[in-house]
Length: 315
Figure 1: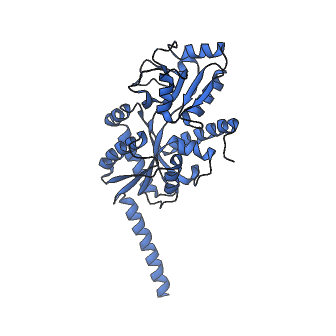
Figure 2: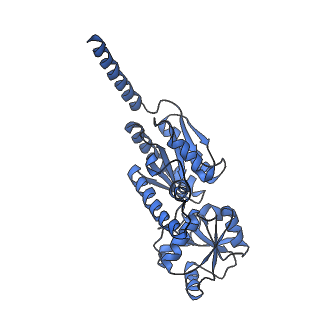
Figure 3: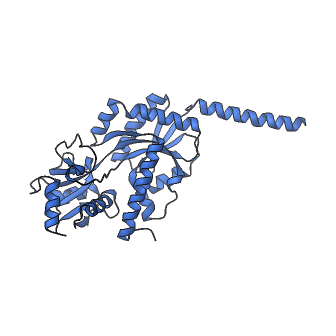
């Protein structure tokens, strides 16, 4: 009887201790995984976010780059990590909503707790600086009159800009030819040199380049290219964004998840954070855990449909 009582008391004390630890969260260094290499746009955004989150949480956040296989190596590592709230990740869209439809990966959308969406980086459509196209309306008009003649570049087959353009072209009821390049830089260079008519890329890729940005695939115009109309302004209701947010291994304590989400909201809604994002042709775009999860699920489903139709899905 005494042994049973002692065991029960020990179990209860462990539960109380666990609750106390969760209530004191965070009480030690947090690791933020970035699934791409150091120096890239996701890494830069992650470090800016981590720096501000440290001030809000009162604990150190160490950014660790785990690159490989188009971001899937890092996300697999996060999915398999201990769900204690001390490993989180800054995840860009593609490894979550594109790669699982293209190749076998060690995770799915249910592998994570979604903390918050942090930024929104709409895809833009650019053309050579001396192009005859003044805006996106000109492109649409020309494409309808000359089916299949226009070409566009992207970062490669299955990239978010490529998948987004397929959706846009379908919505417009026109035909264009895809010319894949190696990364956004190659796509911009191809348009800049007149080798393709258009380039579909992330907004940060056109900053400082001798190209004309003629469309933003977003509900709102971008501060970095204020003269570029949104696709919606010319009748195309398609949003295409290279968003990013914070996730954690599935099953972290409720208190840790709530604390992280609250801190994230406090940071993302500051003017200082918005200015940091604007410097990278992006914008602060907070979404709470439920809202972020919905964005991920909806975008993943839409991309799966396009990838399947293109015959690019995993075998």
